[in-house]
Length: 121
Length: 396
Image (cartoon, rainbow over all chains, first blue to last red):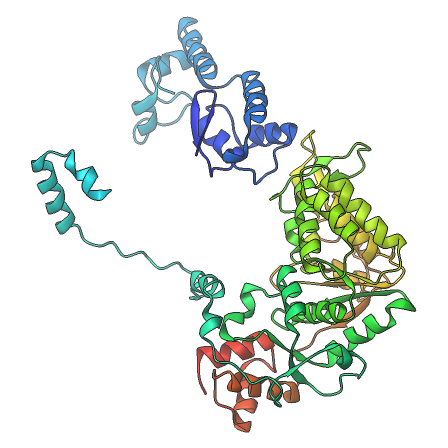
């Protein structure tokens, strides 16, 4: 049985709290716990136990948060601003090098792989 | 299904798939690190109805007898293996008194050993009308605390008592069911658990409850107002003069985790005594609420590692000065004051002898006086669970 919440589909036997953490960018264990407590979902509640009103309440709650595309755009925007104002961090992002003063003689593998202005998040 | 699925494939890809399947080596699962015990087997064995193929022990012999209502009048002086009447056994099953870790699958009958501690329980039930009876069974893992609770239930059922039993107290606080703030805000209601407990009570006490009681409990198990109906039922029992035994197993779950996994709407942790069903249980255990004619029994669990709260509450030692709630729960310790402790010890050599005669009669080992001495030593001076496992796991 599949439950759909805000365009994401969840397996029925997934814990609500864990499912939210897994599928929504910007929702961690803390936020998921807070949402579940607020809506009265008990800790071991599973996705298939969510009925229509509960899904609506959950959707309403999630829509108030800055998550998914909105959060990704904000992060990219912040990188872009750093570049535009000519800051060192912006430059390092553009060069694909570590931003926080790490060494580059060795290591820096992740930075070389990931850091760029239109970074994939 | 398999064939239908293949029909759509291209013939070449099917051949490639077959070749790949042939070449693929079977990956062996790496064994889990640990004590070497294969837990899944134990669990599977408990639920696999192996007991149906176990050999029967003749009832009415020196190895096994039926324990019926008239036996309650005579004090238990010698250890003996007993089996309870079928109707009582059915109630015990509804109360989840037979647990998977007890290796019940080895025997056809659900027998238990009447021992010193059983006579203490018999006395508690006898004196229930004259004085307040609250007791806590303590002892190491596998010493027979849950079995003694089951015996208490059987004795109570033989005397037509109403038994309210919570088989696993940890389930009340582990977040597997809901907890909703009540209208007053002081307590968190547990509708799902109320419904389940009401069903359990109705099934286990079908013979002694009136039709009105059943109706009330059924309305509790329906989706109407489970909390209100259960509360009303327990208040009725409290104000009436019917004999009631309220009991709970694994009470030390409250000590291990004083706060429930559930949280309030504000995401604040909930103290276990603020939940509806633990509160009912602890109210009766601390004598805040009383039945006119009744007893309260609880048992700790050897499975759950807990701190010294229960020992201190029972009067062994004094409270530590600088302890966090996780280290010492003063509120719970205060509730346990005045409770009689029944320290469940291991089997004595005489009890081991009786028990091994029964085990031998069930075809699990061969009886000899030397075996009794050997098994007594192997099991750490008569720990019942270790004793049975030693009989099954390795022969001497």
